[in-house]
Image 1 (cartoon, one colour):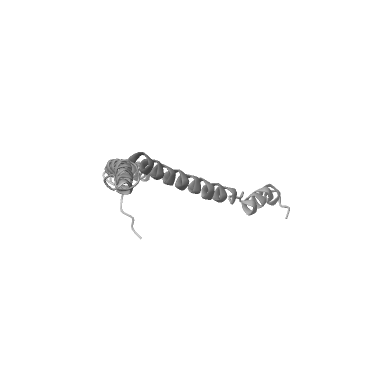
Image 2: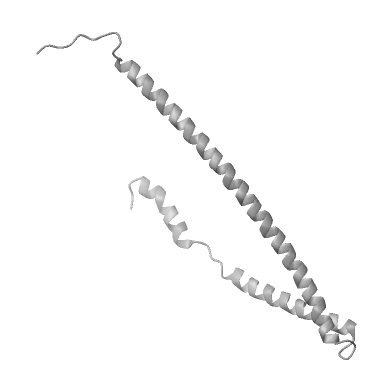
Length: 134
């Protein structure tokens, strides 16, 4: 078997490793740049979305206020119904009752929250398992 002589232009193992590591480093940095640019677009779109939700929430609050005034004037019915101050007090009382009901339901739901007992129990067993004890 005849072997061919190594030429100066043939890459050495060291040169191949250096080139490969440089190429991998370049690839990783380019991937990071791509991820950053994609995140900038996503964050911008997310920020616009949050702003639009906030504006919609604000307009919703204004709509509830206007609906409340309309209901009070409906109860008044151009002076043929209850007096206007009583109509507004009725609407106020309705919202107060609704808020009280929401607080009551919220308190009951919060009282149902329990600690993750199974996960805590398992977490306490980990040090013993690492020591080789069952």
